[in-house]
Length: 181
Image (cartoon, rainbow, N blue to C red; front, side, top):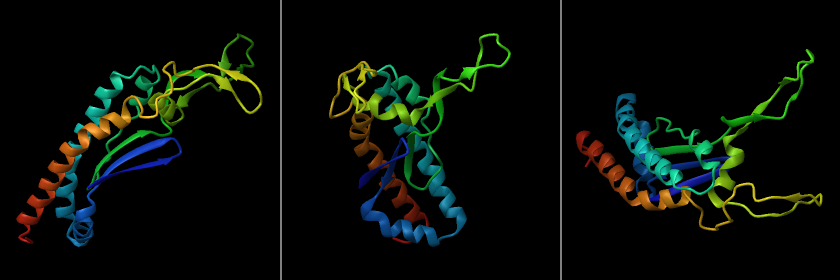
């Protein structure tokens, strides 16, 4: 059983994909919608428990932006165990914008940062340095860079064996109920 983590547009998608049961998933695709719905209904609580573990590890992260990224966690209803973290959801304080035409000093067009823009820095930390244009930048994620990550990788590594076993039991019970064993 493997966990597939896809990176794209600031999203970290954790999806439990049972390699050994891939043919079974293809078979379930051919079954009626009711059976597929039962698998989705049973996998949803497993996804929510994995998301809960991610939130617990995130609460212990030293990067303050992690609390904002945690607001973006979603567990879409799927036949596989799935947790989406990051993406385009706006989190945090609004920034930027332009002065309003009323002249009262208010700014319009302000926008909060998308969670996906904060995801990797909150997971791995940051460091001070100079960008390509020669401008100095600070340690904006407060915690120093850590190759192993601070919260997301640790949560997935910790909880994978538990949730994988439960998912295998779930699929085996569906097989027994359909008398396919």
